[in-house]
Length: 211
Image (tube, rainbow, N blue to C red; front, side, top):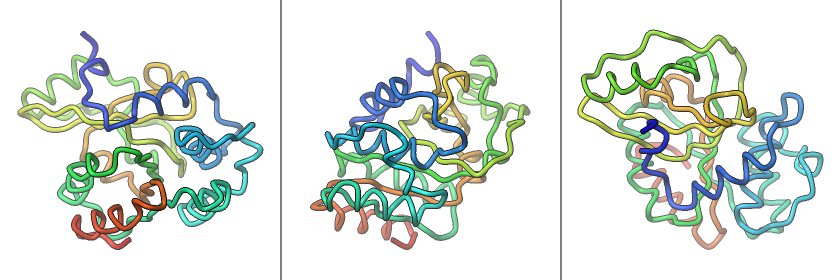
């Protein structure tokens, strides 16, 4: 069985994956527009194309503002800022079940990632024994991705990353070591129905981050 088939997906993440794959590829380098569109559609908000979400810009702040505006206030993108550590990110992941309608958007520096085509055998060796694969990403860009779920073993944790390009990983989804995700993170958005925003902010604060 492939490792992606063993992932413990966050609530609603399999729908996000399906929506992302249906929309791929992202236009040009507009990863924020792509991730914003997928998040809006996941919450049943009609968006025609990535052109309609271009206001998401290229930063967590502009993406957050666009999500609020394009959803007519139905959604809030709660930011998480601070010093990224494995402990903090794990704390966010642990609280995800409190937010069943969550889309978790990460703004990353892809130079911190491992190679998205790292063989499953190497990743399984890491899960079982903690030996990290040595392959690094050849791509260098600031980029939005969706965090879809985790897979944990005695040696560590892998995070499922949903990208905007189908050739990356398996149909646009690949696995990264938790420590690699921490190294790559430059911002995190918890996209939730606005009624759930206080719960999302409380989760961010419990993780030791600033909402």
